[in-house]
Length: 413
Ligand SMILES: Cc1cc2nc3c(=O)[nH]c(=O)nc-3n(C[C@H](O)[C@H](O)[C@H](O)COP(=O)(O)OP(=O)(O)OC[C@H]3O[C@@H](n4cnc5c(N)ncnc54)[C@H](O)[C@@H]3O)c2cc1C
Image (cartoon, rainbow, N blue to C red):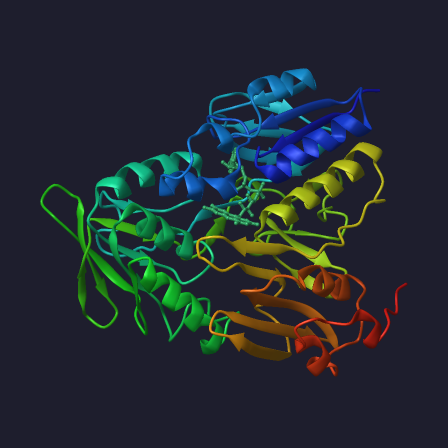
């Protein structure tokens, strides 16, 4: 009997799952449903497009023909409104109903909107889709003054877009530094200097109170939490994600700031899986539930879910060390694993633009941040994957070149 797979979301998680299912089961029916008007594109590259440094073409990953060649049914502009896990049906806003044997939820997140005065003014940009990038590129190219809010991995993209497009921008940060959950002041200062060099001024111990708008409804300023008004016709804001789970509300699928899944990407409801940014998954290395918003992780979760859906067995396990790099500066930057959590840490500054921080949990390395020198990244990822008990060997791990043979051996090899 042919199995019918319905995949919600054509991001990298959904698309990888569709490809994996097709490779594993040539007979299966595969349908991918997305509310976007275009097939999978490279979300990582839309920042380079918005900077004005890249044309549209290289951002696209899949032409519609890619789906036809694999006999995958792609439904664009289709907003999913509900799921019935008893009837095994998916309901959409105005495109009818889809029946499934196996369902994958891979709908990711939507940027959080802060409910403050004038939040809907023109010129305030959230950043998630290619469409957002087109608007940001056009507006940043003509804007003179800007403000960026959100001292994390997406906020810094908006800051770099301002820098590249010549917008004279202020970057409001809560606390005394950028990405304070993963970097100490020593590491963050390297980033602050680089931002200043590109014409973006960090403003610390600050944050959004409300926006000011002119008589045409266009943003004209940002009033910060200290009562200071920063003139701005361009605002970029990235303060977190709302996970797209509304359509699961009437189901028994467990949702708690994301869809809860095990290491096989299975939810608590039979035949319903989830993958990508939307999951709060059981991480076999951390031995805990966690979340990760990165391209590589979403792709691998899609592959794992696709294999388990197509074989109808929980055979493939998600065992993965994610990483996230920033390429806006003269020096490289990479975070790996889970650098924002952990019970212990170790760090070292090697030069003005070279710094390393490592985090540990249960005696194991679980993540870190590398600035300036990424040469040890695969060594660190290997140590995490192998679950070596190295928390008491911090000195050896902070050496410029880490000698794997000098460290505690892996208990799982
Ligand atoms: C600007 C930007 C820069 C980034 N840079 C990096 C980077 O450098 N490195 C890195 O590792 N990661 C980066 N990321 C994060 C990375 O892109 C994401 O982790 C990854 O794309 C998540 O993939 P996903 O498939 O889980 O979700 P998504 O890519 O969000 O895909 C989900 C899809 O589901 C659709 N959808 C949602 N709700 C519905 C609904 N109700 N009905 C139908 N369709 C729906 C959405 O429209 C979307 O197309 C960046 C993200 C952004 C926005």
